[in-house]
Each structure stands twice: as structure tokens, then as C-alpha cells.
Amino acid sequence: MCLCDDCGGACCRYVTINVGAMTPDQQRWATMRGDLEGLRWHIRSECEHLWKSGRCAIYSHRPEVCRDFDVGGEYCKDARARWKNERADHADK
Image: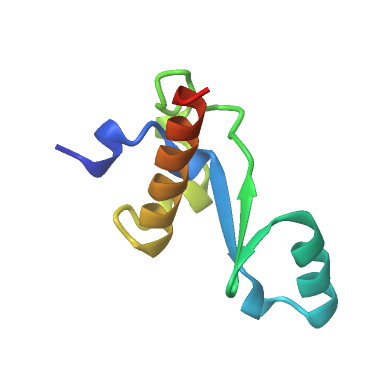
């Protein structure tokens, strides 16, 4: 079983950027416009090619950034946790 089988496309719903690689001006801008956690800036941004099932509509032709994503890596685990919490919050309402 692949890690992606039960995650619902979490990596396609969140983008995490290392703000340490940004200029001070960019860091200030990020602080005002997103969920900043340490040196990580989390942005909720759902991919337009994500099906309701959580699968990719263009998987065989997906962009390089998607192909290079480290499944099971640090950002994957972070996106999965954020998506799980978001679904739980919506289920409570």
C-alpha cells in the first residue's frame, strides 16, 4: 500500500515554503499572509487538478515539482497532519 492511498491528496492542498530561504522583506510579507510556524510558511492552496477522490487528474503528466515531492518526507507528513486536522475540524461542525 502506498502512503498516498489514504491521505486524500494532502500535498495537493497545502504548500509549505522554507522562509529561511526568503529575503527579510519576503519573510515579513509571509508573516502577514499565512500560517507561519518557525521557518515554515504554510499556505492552503488546492491544486486545480485534484479530483474529489484526492487523486491527481493529470498524474501521468504532472509537473516536475509534483514528481520530485518526497512522499513520506517531512513536508509530506506535515501536509498529511494539516489535512487530517482540517477534516476533523469540518466533521465537528
